[in-house]
Length: 276
Ligand SMILES: NC(=O)c1ccc[n+]([C@@H]2O[C@H](COP(=O)([O-])OP(=O)(O)OC[C@H]3O[C@@H](n4cnc5c(N)ncnc54)[C@H](OP(=O)(O)O)[C@@H]3O)[C@@H](O)[C@H]2O)c1
Image (cartoon, rainbow, N blue to C red; front, side, top):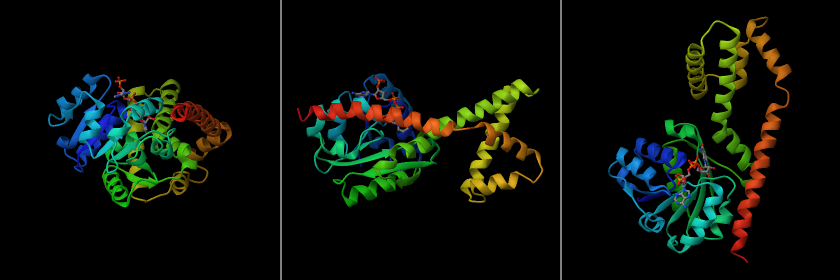
């Protein structure tokens, strides 16, 4: 199967790396392009049998399945200009949350899906969030699930939980990294440990914790309970978290959803243009 990638920034590159590393695709299956074309050539230097195309139309024409890995407001202009190249049997996958499959289907006549990946997919791990368009037939649904099973656990989501699911799956690694860095910083400021050494310990802890959860040895609550021995030291730390975290995550969710609404509004203005 020929696979097109339009946009080889962070996510485009991660998808290429992961899909090749998982052996579900060969590097020779890829036809890639980027606005700043040098970024695509840099990937070709890593995988010499990848084809770099100078024109988006060549990527779409050569690919059976095309990933659109650009930012939300960059999607409509591309679809508007190249919609005729997306013929019925081809499949288009967008990877961004503020653009719905219905909006994509309103411009192109091919099969359409949305797959929101996560940086964790680079380690062939974590979740990917799948939403299929009405237009997406059984064959493509199966194919997309099969592909994403090799780099993640694909999960189907409804439109109404798109943002919160993306907050957890895609933004989550950044949020958790931030929290852990705050712990590391406090450790190095308040105690004799160096930041470097605390980072090494914290990273090892996180990897170990991930493995416990992966092996289903514990759930999050049972893991907390097991570490938190009665009358022990962990409990004192948990009390501080309980008392001082406050509504931080409620505020975080409100902030991401507010930005999401703004993005949706901007995106909708673009898609409305076609009706004017
Ligand atoms: N980063 C994540 O963890 C993550 C997770 C899930 C979903 N996403 C979604 O993935 C999308 C991309 O995010 P990103 O982090 O990969 O952003 P990014 O690093 O900015 O990558 C976007 C790429 O698209 C290219 N591009 C823009 N317009 C183009 C055009 N007309 N033709 C060809 N290439 C074009 C840009 O080229 P230039 O080099 O010229 O700028 C850039 O390389 C976003 O919509 C985001 O919501 C990201």
